[in-house]
Image: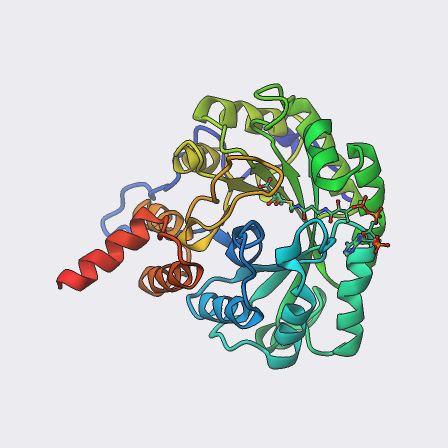
Length: 362
Ligand SMILES: CC(C)(COP(=O)([O-])OP(=O)([O-])OC[C@H]1O[C@@H](n2cnc3c(N)ncnc32)[C@H](O)[C@@H]1OP(=O)([O-])[O-])[C@@H](O)C(=O)NCCC(=O)NCCSC(=O)C[C@@](C)(O)CC(=O)[O-]
């Protein structure tokens, strides 16, 4: 069990008043500033595609994951073990996991692939595949050499900050879903998988509006961390988050003793506030951000919500702040354009379009 301590008692690498880049004090020959790494979690193949109305062929989904893997992204959410009656688009996640384990997608660096599994049925479907290829992935405790040559795997559970959204999304109360997650998290840890836990609608709910209690978010996050989750991703599912409310939420998390390293932020860009909220999160020490290529996405249970902030915009934003993402923006822009074409929709990444436009002029 992870012990949570008040934030003031554990040395924090960053505080709200720390500028994102810290330059060394003047010397005659100051070394170049060391870049701060940020982790971009690409959620396009799952969050991005789950709400598309026409059935996307398995080959297209696999091609998307392979193309993303070649851009430098190190974490890719690849599918979801949920009821096909509820989310038909994710019905072939089993085949996607099979492909990842069986074919070892080519990449110049180790990649962790993440799959949603909100209950024991979802996890047992996923673990049946792991049993088929028991040595095809690198467990968390594997030696570095194994981690370099085999994919890492992560299981993601998901709760909500409001009862109404939890009921719509998972057909049970928050307490009941947390109970179900206990088994999933324990089994995932036993199998050597890392665990991510989402909390949706943390900054606004399609049913309860702005009435989301940040203390409730902190309470759920604490419970999930104590169950063994490695990371909590705070979802602004509706995109209703604003800079002051993002700041207030993160302050509340800090007061509850939840460390910035334990958190990721998951912004949808419905109101165009995602990067503003990202900047606030950076100031609070968060270094992991979810995004989806070409801004794909939208939650089936959040009417009107648009996609996640686009990965191209996120990478550009981080790199222009002098932070290191490890992602090749040009290559990512190509993937965004390609998948938009495959889906017959417009490319929703302004940076993606700008990169391609600038290239076509040169
Ligand atoms: C959780 C359930 C299944 C409960 O749904 P339920 O109907 O209450 O489940 P049940 O336990 O009563 O079982 C009913 C049937 O579903 C089957 N079943 C039961 N579980 C599974 C499973 N895991 N995989 C496949 N099948 C399953 C089960 O076997 C049974 O089949 P039947 O006997 O009728 O043939 C359902 O509510 C569900 O699938 N919900 C998924 C909702 C979802 O995927 N939402 C989108 C992801 S969350 C999100 O997008 C937000 C996020 C993460 O991106 C962050 C953010 O932006 O906020």
